[in-house]
Length: 93
Picture 1 (cartoon, rainbow, N blue to C red):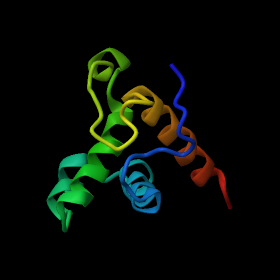
Picture 2 (cartoon, rainbow, N blue to C red; picture 1 turned 180 degrees about the vertical axis):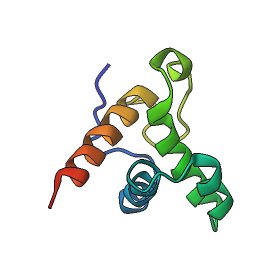
Picture 3 (cartoon, rainbow, N blue to C red; picture 1 turned 90 degrees about the horizontal axis):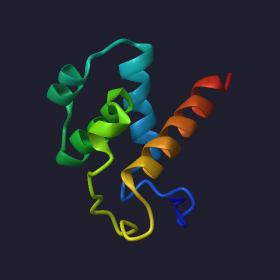
Picture 4 (cartoon, rainbow, N blue to C red; picture 1 turned 90 degrees about the vertical axis):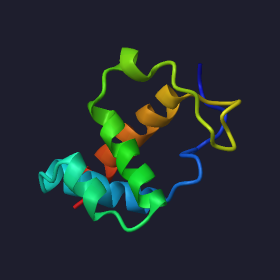
């Protein structure tokens, strides 16, 4: 299934997600430490989105999204999009 919502990442700010991904994968901060440092529920959710990159497809395939586009895309779509966006952001000079 392909998402029909270009750039959909629910109601989250990709810049925040990318910053957490950098802390997690570049700076080596583990997910639990990031969660402990979060200032809001939204930040915790953004960190959890980053942590989905470490989870096998079979473990998350059945999770249903609650974002405004949930009827048009799946968690697998969002995770694949997030991976691509992070790879692009990390490859920029």
